[in-house]
Image (tube, rainbow, N blue to C red; front, side, top):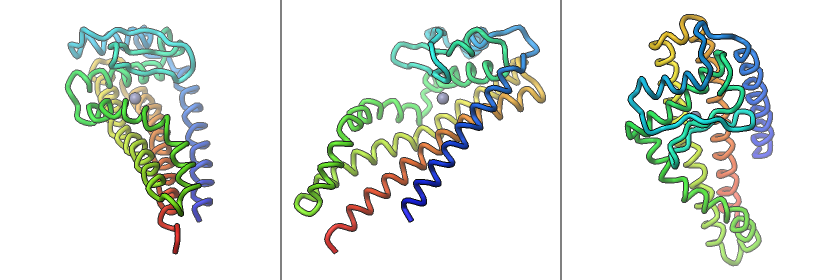
Length: 224
Ligand SMILES: [Zn+2]
């Protein structure tokens, strides 16, 4: 039963990734009605929202776009930074949406940021603690329980990520439309690209939840 669930999640994960890449390919070829690159879009978003302490920079790689609250930068990949397309505008506005969440003290992003050091600590130990926990389950069940708690922190993190991502996309699409950068069908396409990206976070959260359940089942199943 559990294995079927894991196989299903793996297949869904593949399909979601594939659909995301497909949509980005299509919307990357659709030019905006205004002559603006992702960088221009990001700069205007920050200006329009009165955010003066965040810089827009470029980062190498594909789909590596992210907002870094530690040094106040919106990092855009090459195909977003210097390109005029619906996909580039959507991604640039989405990442700036995170900067706006920070500026406004949006509760879920505050929780997410607070969890970052905890989760990075947990990630370093999870594999070893769970491995030891499974080996020692009949003698020291506490080890497994500690491993489950560490894993639960990462699951919580991936669940908190969901509202943060959906909210950033909502802010992005609303602003793109309001600022006149997209309208009509192009706004719909920007929304569609961001929805496709959001599904990858949903699948990641489901996968984490299923793995957590699996460890809990092993723990509950010890000694009958
Ligand atoms: Zn995001």
